Image 1: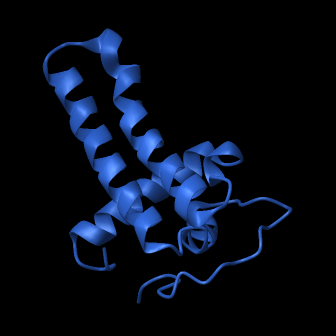
Image 2: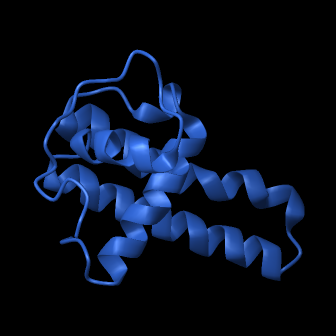
Length: 113
């Protein structure tokens, strides 16, 4: 069964989140706009390819640049389409892990693109 399949907006838990499985439904609710989700998937995919390219070619000093496309696409989606503040600002690690999970679910057909 898919978590938060309708991308229902959920209230932020003021106590925070103790696990990714607890955070992920909130994350999906913050991505109810289709264009925002698509920009996340595109940006994260480009970022992963950029990171892989840097690692494969020994361009270790360029690794920080690999994160730019992912964040640029994601933040554009939030500010222009979703009209909310990215969860990255409060929960950077859960947000990054949720981005990867979203991409995985889209690529495996478990979640619509």
